[in-house]
Amino acid sequence: MKDGIRESLSAMMDGEASELELRRVLRSEDAALRAEWASLHRNQQVMHDGELPFAGLDISSRVMAAIDGEPNAVKRGSSWRQALTGMAVAASVAAVVVFAGSERMLGGSTSVLAASDTSVSSGRVYPAQMSPANGGVPVSAIAGGAPSMSPAVKSEADKRFEVLLRKHTERASLNNGQGFVSYARVVSQESE
Amino acid sequence: MRCRVILAVAALAFSQASWAKGPETWLKRMTDSHRALNYQGVVTYQVDDRLSSFKVSHVVKDGREYESLEALSHGDHEVIRQGHDISCVHPGPELLHLLADGSPEAKQLQKLYHLSLRESGSVAGRAAIGLSIQPKDVYRLGYRLALDKETGLLLRSEIVNKRGKVLERFEYVVLDLSFDEAALERDESQLIAHPPVDEQGSVPEVNWRLSWLPDGFTPLAVRDQAPSISYTDGLAVFTVFVDSTQGVTSQRDSHMRRGASVSYSTTHKSRGVRVSVVGEIPMLTARQVALGVEWSE
Image (cartoon, rainbow over the protein chains, first blue to last red):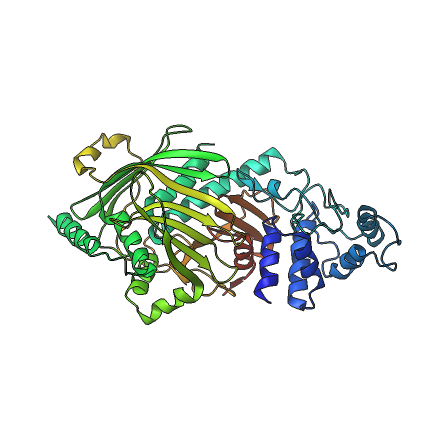
């Protein structure tokens, strides 16, 4: 997989990819890349019972068709929002494409948890607040929307992150060349 | 005294510092100076618009390090580490030493990062030199560092992603390099004891292996034999944890981020374990490593 495409994929995970990059990833003829893309989606599609709907489905061609407004995918003349939503409903694919809100995903100012059981795992597509010809719209491959995670689960995940980060920092501070100051990552976490 | 001999050697090395030296030499100085010098200062840690400040103290006494990090904002947390043998060189710094010495092994690091020096203003009232470290692939993060021209001590550190976004920033705002070891005397009963980490260890034995590891990362020999393995390329470090799922409510993949630190967790139901990768790396790297764990039994 080329590093440029891989970088786009990485940026999508961090909620920093542009719409043009999403297109580039989706257009790729690289099977491994599409598999990765599908995997990223499946990661967000796990239902509450842990089942994987349409586990082997490569949705990239459908999403691209929808974006390009091809008649065999969606009704011609429909808006992007209609196209994407229509595609999703017709295909009943639990695909999630988020075209906004990158900062609330992984780039937030505090610990952010984005697990698979978000409220958008019900076969819906969220083409929120995008402008069709704008290449600068942040795109995330990770499901956004309001997390449906219960406070108990989130608390457990926060606590676990804190414990693992502390253990990791014990070793990292001896090996990252920066030293003991690395513990600020842990202490500031505890202080929140 | 042993510590004085070591400090004298360190001081000599620093005094011979030449501007003609390349970024590799500055990296070596950085990784040595924070352990060899006595200092106390106030350092800020910033993630987005959140700023925390800490008092950092470090002294070397009888060949051993005593260091503390005390939160000045957000409560009264403090972390202490004491008894770390100054002569103990860990794998990460060793990689940077090899780089500075021009060792063939060090060429690996040069394959991974672009290193360059640049002018930098003063930090905490001290003249600084800038060191830019740009990754050549997407599997690690970049660094923008400011080092003390006199000693090589790290004065400011920014970790940036491939898009140039600053994920976290450490910066000294006050630094006293004349800090005396006597100043660290205190009521030890109040200290949070940290196990000494000195002797060389080994890579923990585990029943799993990674089917994929980014170029240049090697497993760390550690003294604590916790069933987790940490990997470093000399600058970035990540740790792979494999724990029981007992007590874990959610069985789904999840990821967390704070500043430059991320974690990615995935559950292997059939084995009843949860794999978590934690480190200062891109989320995609953490995920790829976590999903690549294979079982050897």
